[in-house]
Image: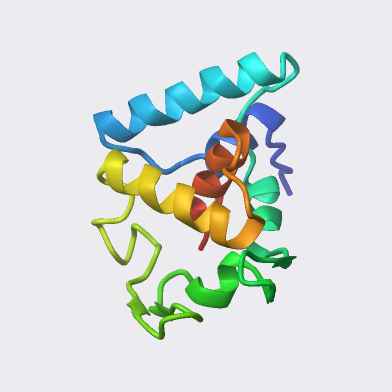
Length: 139
């Protein structure tokens, strides 16, 4: 029986398999540049770091324990519900909802709002890139 060895570089490429439209790719490249400026040891965005950010609970701006999963659910292919307003949130998965991650303006707006709601601060470039990497590659 043959054994298949996958190099770390190949694994990274598999994890980051999602392709963006040119506008989103430019945004992701700018996040990488900012992340490298903030941390010279930065290599690339990471699915596992993004997953931790997305699923970990914090005391949010309304003083209650909350995470991104509180509104978006663990299944990014299904609709969620805003815990404050009750408003339905369309699926985050671009495989299910092709409008997701198609317009940089919308991505920036919602990342800014959601980081402030959950973490009470704006996310760093690395955090934003990690979360986007997680969302677009989650199966």
